[in-house]
Length: 214
Image 1 (tube, rainbow, N blue to C red):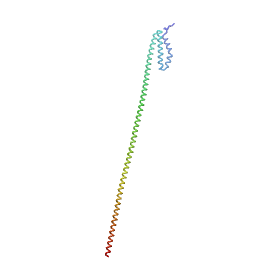
Image 2: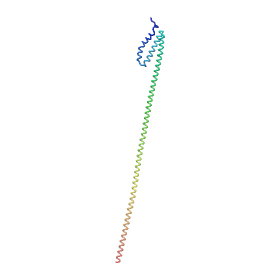
Image 3: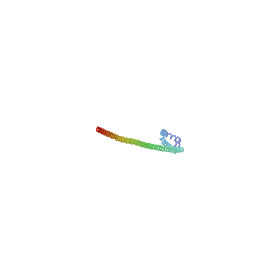
Image 4: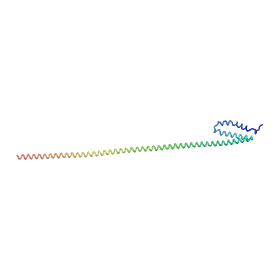
């Protein structure tokens, strides 16, 4: 009858391989992020079985294999944890970077909006100043036109006044000339009348003298 200690190490290893074969097959088809933790569990169970078998069988080789396997599992688990932490940090850093990029983009859009607002305000002020300048120029031209028209009216009024004054002077001169002509005519008429009277008196005197002598 074969005792437990007489079971060869190879038989134990073969049995373990047979037992974990379905698990290994399934893990090869599983996603990496799920397969690794499960593989760690399978390898840990493998190490536990090898360690137990080594103690039961008194086989230092199995116990050494169990120890190496546990050490390897621990190292791989730590490496996996470090990788996962690094991935998480990278993801977090990416999220922070994305948040920073989003915040920067939001600030840029806000700055662009503010700049556009200021440009519109500046353009509105320029247009308002231009409109005010156009209105002021229009008012200046209108005032200048009114002033010119008023000046022209004033000049025309003065010209009319001067023309009226000239007409009045001419009229007065004509009146004075007419009066002078009338006076001259009257003087001539009186002179002629006087001369006629004198001539008649002389003729009468001559007739009288002629009658006296006859």
